[in-house]
Length: 299
Ligand SMILES: Cc1cc2nc3c(=O)[nH]c(=O)nc-3n(C[C@H](O)[C@H](O)[C@H](O)COP(=O)(O)OP(=O)(O)OC[C@H]3O[C@@H](n4cnc5c(N)ncnc54)[C@H](O)[C@@H]3O)c2cc1C
Image 1 (tube, rainbow, N blue to C red):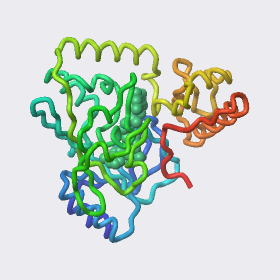
Image 2: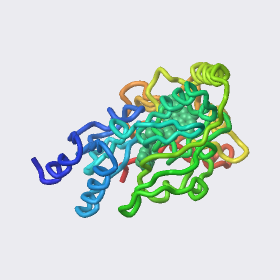
Image 3: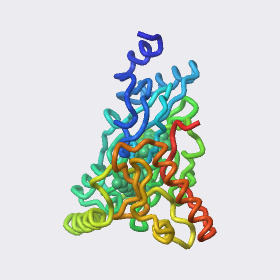
């Protein structure tokens, strides 16, 4: 057993040579040398200090629902909080949740407690940590509207920071500027509501997703951010790319801002399709489309 594996195993369950394709909703990605599942913040702290001291690269994964991993091996540590660090606690109209908690599960738990505010999130297949990082949102609402504080591990210290200090914007946050910060948990403020009304809104949102998104195929959700004053899907439709296929990657027939893994797509198939779309949209409409899906482990 190598030295790092031995030391990491003191603090967490560690798996080795795990295909990132098994940890992403796109089902694409080469092997990660180590995957580590800390059980609590004490283990997380010890692991982070170890990685820093040994200068080992790491990446936190939530559910991998916004990641395009390359097919290359990742010679570092993937840190996953969703196996153990996923508890949540309700108190009056507030909920405190660990970062590995599923956003969908938390939305349904909030509804059960008669708390409104997370209906928009009830179909977003990520963790709380990933949703804070992205300021995930839908139906004109986003995480920043319900967040009160974020529990952050940074520079070897765990501390609560106020949501106002997280620089939230459209699918953006301060965490995107600090790749070594880890979201460990959140405090959210919700609003008391009628359970039946909350559930009915969630059902309605679910129906809309099922009818408009290719949920039966592997994807990473919307590929591109919406440019100002336009919608990415309209531009992709405008260049005639519905159904356009490269290798195993295909622009969804159902929702053109989704690229699906139709048939054992390589990471490069997906990226080639992205780049083709960007070039065509730029030359036809003079608009730059930026990826919402994040590339990880590319040179
Ligand atoms: C079918 C489908 C529908 C989707 N619909 C929506 C939608 O309506 N709205 C929307 O906004 N998104 C949507 N998404 C995209 C995705 O679900 C969100 O961006 C989600 O917030 C990503 O969460 P995750 O846990 O999967 O993060 P991952 O994809 O695992 O990671 C994304 C980024 O967050 C970072 N990260 C994850 N956890 C932490 C942490 N604890 N601390 C610090 N950084 C962390 C990662 O390092 C990475 O940089 C959709 C995706 C799919 C597949």
